[in-house]
Each structure stands twice: as structure tokens, then as C-alpha cells.
Length: 82
Image (cartoon, rainbow, N blue to C red; front, top):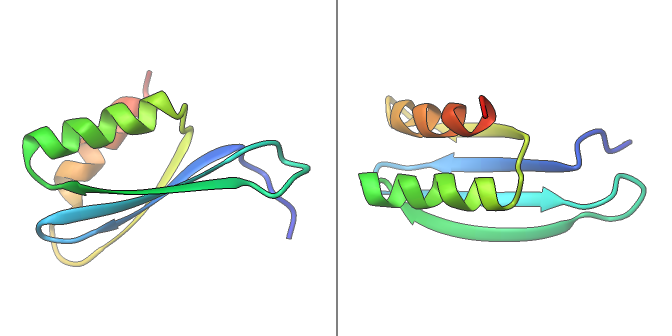
């Protein structure tokens, strides 16, 4: 499979935490990977937002059960609109 995005994140959203994995690097090489866990409090989601911004993430995908994705979507859409 050919890589098409240099900086992307996958978020696994739970009621109390978000596990975030960011893959980044040149498209012609194996990407680097970093994983962090954030709380779903306002402070935790703002930390997630800052972390994704610092890593210059351009694309985010989420997996979530129920409505837990909604506050995470608001935070990550703020990042991607900048």
C-alpha cells in the first residue's frame, strides 16, 4: 500500500480517555509512530489539541462508541481548520 499522508492521527475514543496514535514522516520511508493517552476532561482535550498541533497533524480519524466522539470532534476540527 502506498502512503499518501505525511502526518495523520488515529483516535480511539472512550468515555474517560482518548488514545491517540500519530504516524509521521516522509512518504517514501516507514513512518515514525507516537502514542499518547489523554483524559476526556476539557483540560485533557485541550492537551490533545495542543499535541496534535505541535506534531502538525493534517488528518484525523476516530473510532468511538456512543456520543463520546462529539467533544473530540470539536477539538480536532478546530486544529484542522487552522
